[in-house]
Image 1 (cartoon, rainbow, N blue to C red):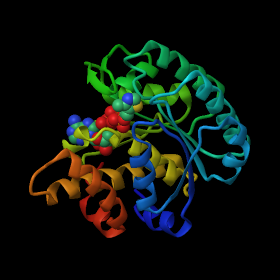
Image 2 (cartoon, protein in one colour; image 1 turned 90 degrees about the vertical axis):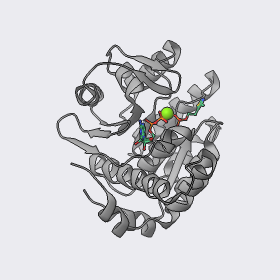
Image 3 (tube, protein in one colour; image 1 turned 45 degrees about the vertical axis):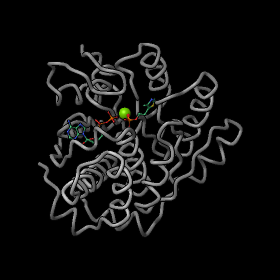
Length: 262
Ligand SMILES: Nc1ncnc2c1ncn2[C@@H]1O[C@H](COP(=O)(O)OP(=O)(O)O)[C@@H](O)[C@H]1O
Ligand SMILES: Cc1ncsc1CCOP(=O)(O)O
Ligand SMILES: [Mg+2]
């Protein structure tokens, strides 16, 4: 794993263009800004082309899209492919709401996506595997998580990051598992969105998106674990704040020491 990419990210300070959701947009912007990227958000279709031109990566979060926003997303992703900017898609709750799954699949049919990052319920839905997703959460299912992630990666010819207690990252052939974790991630709405946008930042500085996704996920998971270990009381609100602090503080040495992966 190329953990040094964390230093590269801070040297390059990539512009990370995000179409976010209104629920978690501030955590996402502050999290990736603290990490060392330069976030910019937009909801305006008419500025899609210059936004994409100046950006190093484009992260599309489908957490609370509207019909109008779908048109913006279509324009932005078309420009991203035209200008060779990596697209990261976070398919929030596509396992729970058919309308979301249909719109997400239409989008994925139109574009070349670099990375899809979702929980097991979301990845299973896009891979056409039976699963009982629960709202924005993974829910329950009995399928083989690695096979499901690989199936989607092959179907969409992209890297898939399937998050959970163990995070699974695959390009459809090779699989990397990251074991760092804390239950506090589940108590903080937006953990997944922050992870997806962190992956966007690393894809903006590393053209090997499989490597970029691994480093991003390791940095994010280790940051959460470090915070949880240092907390006297494991409380949801302070975790959210301290996670942003740790994304600011975390360094290559800490990730090298703490990352638990194979
Ligand atoms: N059961 C779990 N135990 C510990 N950490 C988890 C668990 N599920 C997810 N995580 C962590 O939470 C972060 C967000 O992932 P996840 O909760 O799956 O996304 P989402 O918020 O989109 O559902 C990831 O860093 C992941 O490693
Ligand atoms: C609660 C909620 N509702 C629509 S988007 C959203 C945030 C989802 O965030 P995450 O998937 O990172 O937990
Ligand atoms: Mg999510």
